[in-house]
Amino acid sequence: MNDLASSATMNGIRFHDYGEPTDVLRMEQVAIPDPGPGRIRVAVHACGLNPADWALCRGLFPGTLPRGIGLEVSGTVDAIGDGVTDVAIGDPVLGSADYADGHSAGAADFAVMTNWARVPAGLDLVQAAALPMAVETAYRHLEGLRVTSGHTLLVHGAGTTVGFAAVQIGLIRGARVLATAGDTHAERLRALGATVTSYGDGMVERVTKAAGGPVDLIFDTAPVSGVLPDLVRIAESDPRRVLTCSDFATAAELGVRTSFDEDLGQGMRHDVLGEYARRAADGRFTIPVSRTFPLDDWRTALEISLSGHPRGKLVLLPANTGEDPTVVSR
Image 1 (tube, rainbow, N blue to C red):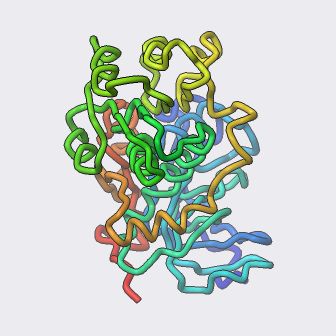
Image 2 (spheres, rainbow, N blue to C red):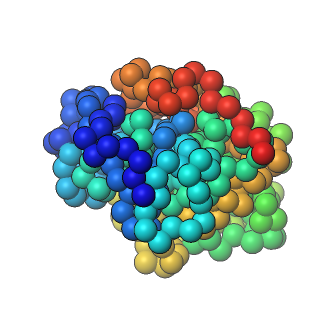
C-alpha cells in the first residue's frame, strides 16, 4: 500500500558513477520509492553510516545505477508491500535499507527496507539505527568461528563498531574475550568484561601475556594495517583460527579466513536483530554513537568517516525527526 503520490519527491544521497565517495556522491531530489512484495517503506528517523557505503561507491557489488548509500536505518512504517504481515503502518522499526534497487537507500527522507525488527520500548531511535550492521556482521563472523563457552577469543579492532559488538556477543556466548583497542573505547570495553590491550609494537607479546596461554580464535575487525601476520603468530601459526572482515588481500596470501569463505555460514543473520535490539533497550548491549548530523551535513560525516577515526557510529538525521529522535515508549 502506498499513501504518497507517485510524483512525490524527497531528499536522497546517491551516486551515478563509481569512484571516490567525495567525488561521486551528491544530495538530490529523487522519487519516493514504493515497497515491492515482502518489503516496507519507512519515514527515516536515523541512518547509520559505514565503511561499506564508501566501498559501494567504489564499485563493490556493482549493479543498477544510480544507487544510494545508508545501509541501516530506524524509522516509522508508512507503506507495506504485498505479503508483509508482521508490522503495521506507524510501527517503529530498525533494520536494513535496500541499496540495490537502483534508486536510493537509507540516507534519504524515506527508505525501502529489506529486513527489519520492531524497535523495543525504551530504545533510542539513534541507537537503534546504529545496531543492524554491527550486530549482523559480528554475529555471523563469530558463528563462523564457532565461538562457544570456554574459548579464548581475541577481537582485534574492538574500537570499531563491529569489534565492539563482537566483544559483547563473545561474552554473551561465554567466551573469555581479549580485545585490542585505542584509548577512546578501552575503558568501556573493560567495563563490559574484556581484557584490553593496545595496538602497535609489542602487541603479540602483550596479548600472549594477557591470555596466559593459547588464544583459541581471533576475529580481525580493524582497518587494514598489515597486522594479520602478527595475529597468525598469536594463533600459534594456525591461520585458520583467524578470521578477518577487512584485510582480504593479505588473508589470501596467509591462508587466513575471510568474510567470503564458503564455510563462514548460511547467509546473512538479520534474524538476530530483534534479540539484540531488546538487549539494547534493556541496557545489556550497545554500539557507541560518535556524532549525529542533519542529512544536509552529510559531507562532514563523510569526511570524518574517511579519516579513519570516527570514534563510533556516525548517524544522519533526515528532516523526519529533526535533531532529537525520541525514545520509543509503548
